[in-house]
Image (cartoon, rainbow, N blue to C red):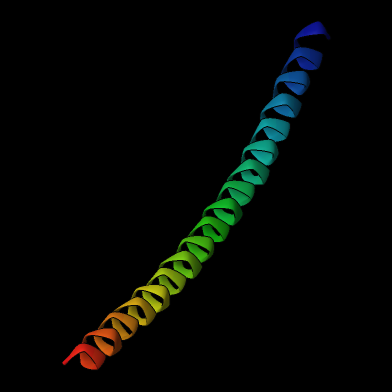
Length: 65
């Protein structure tokens, strides 16, 4: 009797652990996707700022010539 209960407890723990791992895996994937999106936004913003700076410098040089 005790052996059957022990097996059931072990199986319950195994099932719960698998479910918890899947939940954590989904959360990590979501966090990685959010980090990628944020990184892309920063790279695009820096690219625009760099382009604006270059245009400003070239315009200033053109005035001097």
